[in-house]
Image (cartoon, rainbow, N blue to C red):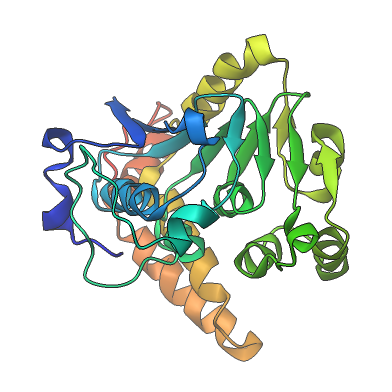
Length: 274
C-alpha cells in the first residue's frame, strides 16, 4: 500500500476535506463528499481516498468497506481543471502525502477486503475506477453509467484497464470507443453492477450484504482476495502451485482452526480475523 500501517493509525485524529470516513463495528464507510464538484477527483481527493483504503487494508478490525457518495452524481471522474492547473487551493485536510505517486486504479488491488459501492446516483468517466475496483456494486435503477471521454478527444486509458477486470474485452472497447451511457439494468448485464434496488431500499441492501459477508471468516476472505489479485500476474503453469501455497497459509489461520472446530462441535464460529 502507499501508506504503512504506522502511518494510518492516526486516521481518526486527521481531517478530511473531500471524504467522510466512519468506522462502526467491522464496517468502514467512505463517503465521497465533494458534491459541489460532482465528486470529481482532484489530487487531494485521491490522496485522501488512498489513505482511507490503506487504513482499511492494515486494520484487522475492518472486515468490509462501503463506498458511498453525497450529491446528485456518485462520481464524475477526474477533475481535469485541477490536474491541469498548478494552483494549490487552500484546504483543511491534514492527510499526509505518500512517498510515491498514487495510481487510483491500482489502490483497490491491494485492499484485500470486500468493498461495496453504494451507487445512489450516476457514475461517469474516472468514476468507473471506483466501481470496477469494488467487489460488489449495488445501484438504484435511475443511475446512469457513461464514458464520455472520446467526445472530448480523450481516451479512458486507466478506466479501460479496470473495466477489463469485470467485462469482456470487446464490450470494453465498444464502451470506450462509442462514449456509451447505459442505465443500471444494462450495466448489470455488462457486469458493472451486481444488484439493483429501489432508492428507498439502498441503505438496507448494502447493510444486508455487508452483514452477510461479515458472517464468514475475514481471514479466509482476505487471503482469497489476495490470491485473486496475485493470480493476474501468474502464468497458467504457476497458478495451481501458488494456490496450493495460499491454501496452506489459510489453513494455519486462527479463523480456519475455529471454523473447523465449530463445524465439528455443531456451533456457530466466532471469527477473530486472524
